Length: 133
Image (cartoon, rainbow, N blue to C red; front, side, top):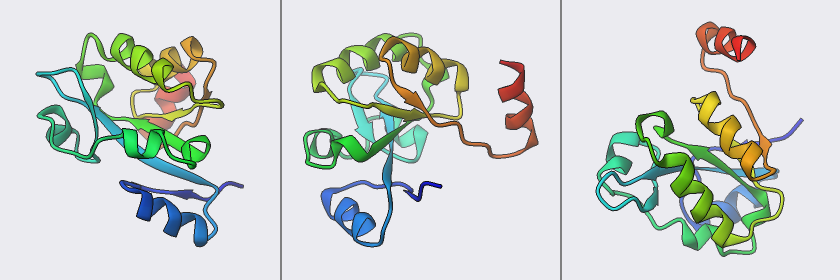
């Protein structure tokens, strides 16, 4: 069993979560619809308008191998997979770990990046969808 810290936004959050015994550090990444840039933001709507922290602080940290990236609102953007692939390849992360409510987009990105995919389930509808795809 893995213990995953939810909604990590900063290096301080990461240090605290690891001190508490968490195995992985989950953070939410959204794509700004105007610039195409990515931000750390749990609220997908705020992320879409670019409100959020720069993910580079975590992605360039000593914690990057423990990150679990939650792709927020990925299905609402036609270029999310392409932009995210370009973004993540530039970071050279080994053992990339992804999750998302949009299992189809997350699976596609995971396959293209040889990443591990962590599926989360909110309700029986999401479990049914998982078995369907």
